[in-house]
Length: 113
Length: 114
Image 1 (spheres, rainbow over the protein chains, first blue to last red):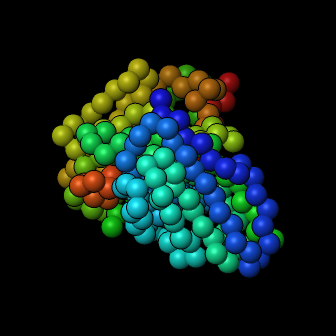
Image 2: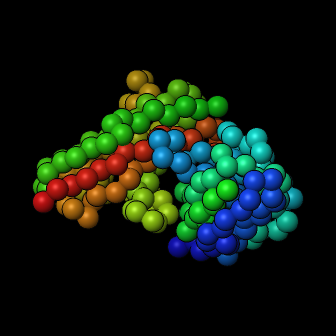
């Protein structure tokens, strides 16, 4: 099974501060994704990447940036955090090919005060 | 893009009965429909999926049906157990190519009572 890890697992930030969420996968998957999960909204795609050096906007990219410096690492960056970005963030990875399956990391709980 | 509607949002059934969750999608080009199960405090995990070249798929007590004409797919859990209690998400692929982007429904909270 794909191994996807996230750090930190919990984060408290102040409004206006910069937050970086990190994701690492060790199965050499091409595609990586960042979602946020909120009650009543399910999982919503923020940014995704289909390889090192690429980032694409998902369905709710406003207020977020992403960085994919290598095949293994995909970061989500909140330059100016706001309380509305308080959420649980999941990273996922998937192989480009015949399988569409996405493997999720354990999640990061972010609270912006 | 794609929009996925999932109903019901809350489902409560008695042990050993069946549970059904329904999803609809908008994009006729969507061709992959997975179902994820998420236990409290855990990450979502794939439990079953179906591609557009199939109408029915079964893995043990899980059955997925796909009606492409109606743009509708559903998950049926037979002989439910308390361990089936969790949040369930359906999803649909928005596009093919190299991106494999999924659009998720808002989830169904299933509770199986003894």
